[in-house]
Structures are given as structure tokens and as C-alpha cells.
Image (cartoon, rainbow, N blue to C red):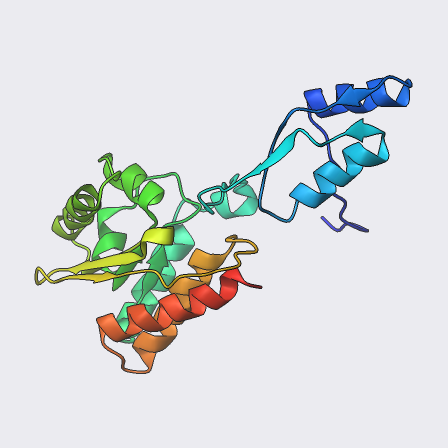
Length: 225
């Protein structure tokens, strides 16, 4: 499907009602909160343009974590078939396979898990894959180790502002803290940037710890884009 453009419009029941009341000539205040993100100025600006007083709209410091809506579309049609075949070809050619668990809701088959060099979920995806809680670092490690017991060689868990954690089949556990970012613009895609940077570092011969540090550095730059 092709489109001729992309537009974002402000809305929401309370905001729509406040805008309508202001346009009707009534003194209208909007009481609420916005985050420190790219949409906040647009939302407040749109209300102000309609005549709504936004002095009671406060800005809150969020967790800087993003929310994602998955639309599988055509990618849902093969139910891992293409992934299985590509993985088998790569492994037969001694090419390491890094599987990002994002976007998938279906269980990963045992044959595919056995052919993966590194499985890289975030903590939410890790919980979905294992059915285990991932609220604490100990829980994250336990869930990652359960995937190791299922046949995965290495599990690299992306933890957002808490950094990342890697466990492998030999019992090694490596923790990398996230680098501080002063002016976060948007975290969307940061995990993808991390996984790509880790794969590049791995192909360059860096150790797991070095690759994690390298990927965390590139992820930090992505926050500021």
C-alpha cells in the first residue's frame, strides 16, 4: 500500500471537548499532563490555538520507555518458515545468527532455538517467551537462563535504561550498564540500533563484553537523533 503523506493530529476526549468549548467562546482550562517528548509541544500548541488555557497542563518526567503496537501484516503469513530456512542456511555456512525477539507473539520452535547463535529480547519479550516474571534483575537472569536450558547458546536481554544482560551456555553472566543520556529525544528504535551494533561488533571479533559496550554507546547516540 502506498500513501501520499503522513499526518499526526492531536485529540482525545477531554482535549476535544476543551477545544470545542473554547471555540464556543467559553473560558476553558485544560488540566492534565504531558511527557517530555516530541508530541508535547504539539498537543499544548493545538489547545492554545483553539483558545484553551494550558497553564494547568504540567510536564512530567517519564521513564523514557516507549510503547509499541504490533501490526504483523504479511510477516505473519509464514509462521517462522522463512526464518527457519534462513537460519538453517546461515548455520550450515557457519554464519552466526542473531534473532531479535521483537514483534513475535508465537512461540519459537525448538529447532529454530537450537540454530540461533544469540537470541536478543527485551525484558517484556523475555517474559512473554518464558512465561516468567522479569521485574527484577534476578528474575531477568533466571528467565534468560531458562532459554539457555531450552537450547539457545546465548541470550542478550535489552533492559532499556537499566542496560543489558547476557548469559551463555557456559554459565557466564555479563552485565552492561546503560550510558547516561542527558537530552533524550525519542527511544523508538534504540533497541534495534543496539542489536545491530552488537552484531557488527561480534563480526569484527570483539568479545561479548566489548560488543555490549560498543552497542550501548551506539544506542546512546540513537536516543539523541
